[in-house]
Amino acid sequence: MIFETKKGKYTKEENETIIRALNEGLKEGKREREILKELSIQLKRGYSGIMSHARKLRSEYPERFHSYEDSGESSNRLNSWNEEEEEIVINTVNTFLEEGKSLSAAIMELEKKLSRTQGAIYQRIYTLRRKHPERFKHLPAERPRRRRKFNEWGSQHPMIRSLDEAYPIHPKELASTAEKQLAAAIDHLHNYGSTPDSSLSSGKREQPSTSTLEEEMLLKAFEERYGRPSGEARSKLIELMRKFGCTRVSIAIFTLAEDKAFPAHIIEFLERRLHHHKFI
Image (cartoon, rainbow, N blue to C red; front, side, top):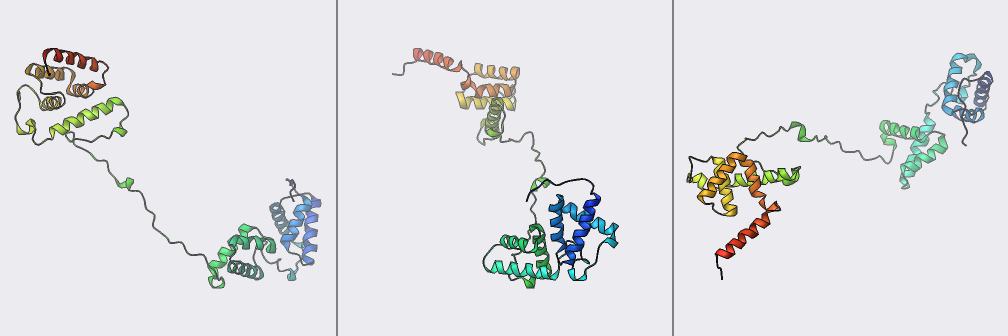
């Protein structure tokens, strides 16, 4: 039954109704919980509020409440469990589990028998299983306790690389096209600089006095990609490297094909070559 509960201070009439109902109900042998539920409906107030107010009235007017030893509840807490209830809980749980039914079904049945909430019943089952495990025929399997595994990121330290060491950069980690081009150029240069049979490692350089190691690496990369440059072209390349920087020149070399004007220059070169050289 759903109704809108009242709130606020209890009236004298409501106090008298609560005291009278408790005294008469306990005298008739009713459970105090059932009496409070009936009062909750009669006074249109919440069950928890009625229960709390009944305790307050007992503490303020103890002489107004009669003691009934046969009721079995006057000396106990309102929500306490007696041995009879615990026996019903144990027997019901064992019966349902033996029949292959779920624990939830047993709790729903106990809710009807004992007029208690499912949460309170489940908590009592847990308490009884812990105190008297031998009285239950079916106990849940204990979960294996495992040590928590923490990620190792907390103990890892950043790797500090040497400035001269080649660092492989994955293209997916780069944010822009320019960074990708730079990474490809630097990786290409490092590959040539680490080649065992290169002219740089053997010490054979055409102009060691006029070019640095980085310039020689870039010249070697240019030669591998476009062919060996003439003396004049070599000097021009070194001049460009010293004017614009080796990094900028290396990017330009490895991205020439991406320039829109590059195909036109290739076609012009092809035309001159066809005019001056007869291949057939």
